[in-house]
Image (cartoon, rainbow, N blue to C red; front, side):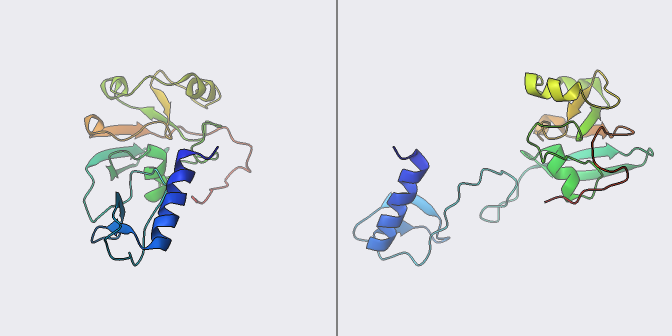
Length: 179
């Protein structure tokens, strides 16, 4: 049995070949099929779920997040709503490792929410996140994994501290490059 996405992809392919696909001015599939429309020049179709890409030139709402580095220096960045703090850190050259690339298989993106009020605005950590946090260096009552802290409007102004070290099996001093 084909999955729902496979069925949709097959339908798009059939309709495109038959020249029966109606598109909007941006050539994004809108789900309208008409046998009387002109053939589409191109169709953009993606199964990507990332919410931080600009679609149609619209500006996404952003929040202000301050990262406090190991040496006490601070860097305030603008983070689109829906983006994880791990992704935001990588995009802004903040040294938050994320060895498992956000798959909840390590604790190297451990951050410490500096204000309890902000910590209480977060959803409760899952059992999987708590299991990984148990492995984190310098665990505190307000520790979270950066890959699980998602920007939302009520977190505007949040301050996140980076712990003094991480527990990783990579060579000391190794700074990974984000993918």
